[in-house]
Length: 138
Ligand SMILES: Cc1cc2nc3c(=O)[nH]c(=O)nc-3n(C[C@H](O)[C@H](O)[C@H](O)COP(=O)(O)O)c2cc1C
Image (cartoon, rainbow, N blue to C red):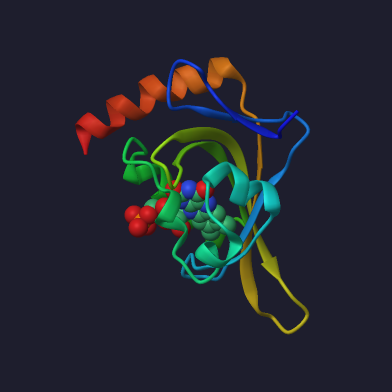
């Protein structure tokens, strides 16, 4: 069975519960690395992703404040976790539960790593409502 599949009723895409969707960025959010299943799920080839801003997968339903929190937490505390709705190249979408970490190598170079897993459906439903409310306020 394929690791990613589309809903038969909507434009939502799903991925295996044993998969880790990985990407790494520089401190400006430019994609330095993405694993195979990230590419498959987002519908891009690796060459289309490397060097692009990570907002290439930003879904318009995501409130700005979520990413403000992501960047502020990851820079100051070194980590952030949250539920993210992303858009695919074909304009379909997928939800992830993301953990974003700050990574400092031995030379002091800073990059950021995101590790995404399948979210609980109840969290997706709660976030759909919450994000819609946040979007009406901003
Ligand atoms: C490691 C890492 C992974 C990220 N992953 C995503 C992601 O999957 N989807 C997304 O919309 N933004 C992601 N972002 C945040 C984007 O860099 C960006 O802030 C966001 O898409 C909002 O776009 P904007 O800053 O142009 O408004 C990630 C940031 C980092 C540091």
